[in-house]
Length: 416
Length: 83
Image (cartoon, rainbow over all chains, first blue to last red; front, side, top):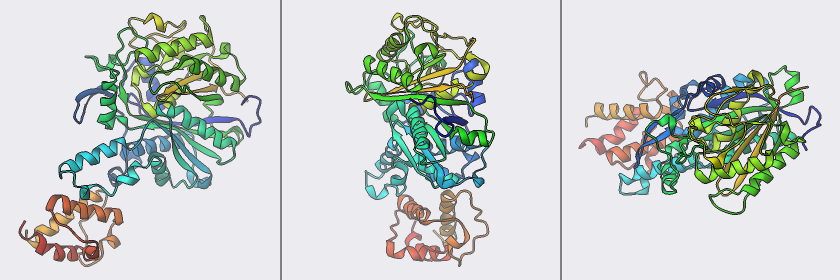
């Protein structure tokens, strides 16, 4: 149980840096979520032509040189942008910190797919002669690339790695950061998730072949979790990195505290490559509540994982009904309906989008919900319009992924 | 290609590889790496671009001959004059 710990073992969020398809920082992202503004657009991808995708529009040259962009990866670039923004947001001066005590922990769904596809496309022009294969390939595709690029950019010499956790990656990066702080491996963690999946035709084609790639004549309406007419996932890129610190350190420097991570859980379905498992999701949610030492009635906002697939949405709603009861106190929303599925970044981005609720007491909605699938009925599901509520003390963030990985992070309003 | 065209080609390739650098005052007889930020991976980009776009293979043993702009022109002139 994480509750009732000393300030040395209480872990708080003191900075947020993000790149979302509808916002380049938390303020913009939140504004879009409250305004119902989607970040989904038409996008052309190799071999498939026009698809729908969530594309980020931050300026990568804000923190990188043109040469860095040419040499590195899109995931690295997104991660650098988010890390720099998070540090600035946390009002940290890196020059005054021991950089060997900073860790970078980023969840990913996959990495290297984009770069490998690009290289194969390139050597196709040379009849697949591998002497034209780039010497940049290996440093670009190693799994630690996005986190490693952050350390190169910021001169961080502490540990860095990514955590491959499918679409639960964002939550799991965050959990890893928390754990490393608790183990006293680092004094500061840059933790979250990142995704460059929109650069891969294979990701789109894979969902298409599964019958799970969303389509709609209006891109903004394409991602519609819980709606009877939902027809799949909108692939998005994005990133979100949090600055995590021990409460003692945050208080000492007078940092703004977004919230305290009081509970988390990770488990595995062990049942199917793709299809979710209600019982394991229930166990995961209950475990996260138990670790926080709280009960379902304590949760005020649940950010659902819901991606807009028939089975996935229904199973998650069944699991939530079983854990939280038919009449939950918690208000429930969905962030993918705005930004699509940002894959490895999804869990972190969606949590970030909800954090301002601690201050404004507003729950952003799930949009594009015109005809509710009865199987997805949830009391207090916030539909299409934001809702003001009286109490926001706990936010509960679901994030699940292929191969049956489930994760939940619970964040509490900060109180000394 | 004339020597001037070869020099312009090399500079064009280098400009793509290190787009942040000012190449206007490069001295021909001083190693490129002493004048601009050009590391070994960048140098391999130069080799790759010559291979891809001009069909020129530079054996590893000859890499040092491309250390300066003048050296590069001298080395590539017999290989590019018919292009």
